[in-house]
Every structure is written in C-alpha cells, then in structure tokens.
Image (cartoon, rainbow, N blue to C red; front, top):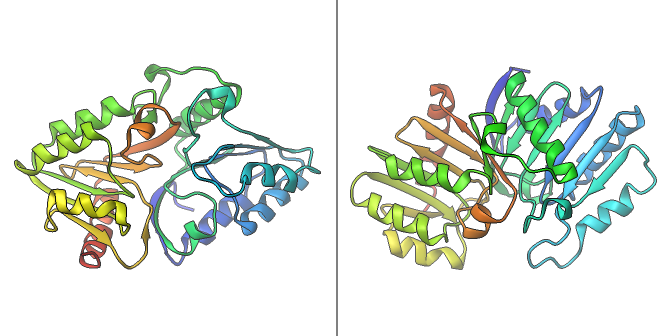
Amino acid sequence: MIPWTILQWPSNDLYSRYWEFLKNTDEYLKLETYDFTNSFFKTRFQKISENWNPVQIILENNKYQQYQNTFHQLQEYFSWDENIELRSDEQMWTTYVHAKITLNEDACWVQTANLTKSSFESNREHFFYSEDKEFHDSLNQLFDADWVGDDLSTLDLHPNLVVCPINCRDVIKTLLESAEKSIVIQTQYIVDKEILDILHKKSEEIDMAIIVANTDDNYDLVSYFWPWIARTLKTRYNHTKMILVDEKYLLLGSMNLSANSLDNNREIWIILMDTWHISTFEKWFQQDWFDSI
C-alpha cells in the first residue's frame, strides 16, 4: 500500500485497502468512532483478536436521537473476547466522541465515515491513509489520552492535526478568515453562527462553493447563500466533512460545522497541503457540484 493517500467513497479499491490494513495488523488495533455496526468489520476485528492482538475501541455511548444503543450491542457482541476492550467517552467529559480514526502498529486512517453499513453503501465519504511515523505516533498519543481521559494541549498535537475541542475553532476561524481567493466546503451541514457569519462575509469578497446534504434542514442554507454558492448533493447522502482554502489547505475529518462539534465533541481532522491531495479533491468536488442543485 502507498505510504499516504486520500480516497473517496464509493471507490473500487477503498474497501479492499481498509480490509488489507486490518488483515496486516500484527500487534494491536485501535478504533475511535461514533458508531460501529458493520458486520464485515466486526468479523475482521475478531480475527485480529484471535491472534492475541489487543483491540481497543472508543465508541459513543449516548448517540444523538438513537433508537438503539449500539455501544451496548457491541459490548454484548464482543463480550466473550478478552482481547477486545470497549470504552465510551465518559472519562473524556465530551458531549460525543464523534472522531473517526483507526490505527495499528504501522499506519492510521482519519476519515469522515463511521463503521456502519450506510457509510460504505450509500454515503459520500472521504478517507486519509498514512504510514508517516510522526503523524501516526501523535494520533496514537491522542487515542491513548482519550482512552484514560488525560488532557492534551495544542503543543501535544502533530502540527497537521486539528482536534476538537482543543484547537479546532481557532484553526477553522483563522483559515476561513484569512482566505484570499477561495473557500470550498463539502459537509453534512453548517449551523454554527460564527462560522456562518464568516462565510457570509467572505462570500462577498472571494469565490465560494458549498455542498451540503440533501435534507430539509439545509434548504435554508442554500437560500441564505443562493444556489450559485451553495447546493445539496442529490446522487447520494453527503456525510463527508471537507474544507479547502485558497487551494492550499485541505481539511478532512469528522467535524460538522456546528457549535457542539467545535466546542464540546471529540473531533479529529487533518490539514493536508500536498498539491496531489488538493487537485484530487477538486476533481471529486467538481463532479459532485455538477450532480448537485
């Protein structure tokens, strides 16, 4: 597998790449996510555990408007396996653990997708894969701190990591306010007033394009910005969370643009500045823009 890349779901090889990553786990596996119901990946986690490799999972225990507690379901599913340990975010004192990362001893993923059936069937999602040791070690340190409820500061984070509620509001505000040419956003929704005010002001000064999910809640957003700036994706459910500023800074991760995500949740993003990553996302975005209204 190449040492770093971004991928868009659906794609022909993303599923197989994630599967290969799990299959090649030889020492440990760590997952931090909002939801985990995909039976395909559950089976693979069990296989890793059968080889006496410890598996640690941090999962939200009190999902928003949940009709069934998938945390308790996963606890029961893995209850017989002494090598799989499951924790909620209660020790972290966050509203939700909404981050979406996976690590083994060699590599890591930062993604917009939960490990659910819809994420890998019906959604638009994006994934970042890395074998960079410095980045991997920083993400691993963050996971270990969340596992026991330790606090971290901005100084503890890799310079490309954006973590809520540690540094994300300041980073997002600074990037958006400093934009000189363009802002491109593809996300589930935007409801944070401070972010909306910044975007509204910037829309009068620079080029801007926004794609959100095709839900009733987002129709006001489209009206607020007008359809030549904001559109809803029709071809599939838009669950991704991406921001591109001035064709220089590309953010990918778990955070929706809401006050709760920015200020209360555990959210994890990465900032990418590589031209290949940026041009690849721009091509994907343009196709979704044409498929939106």
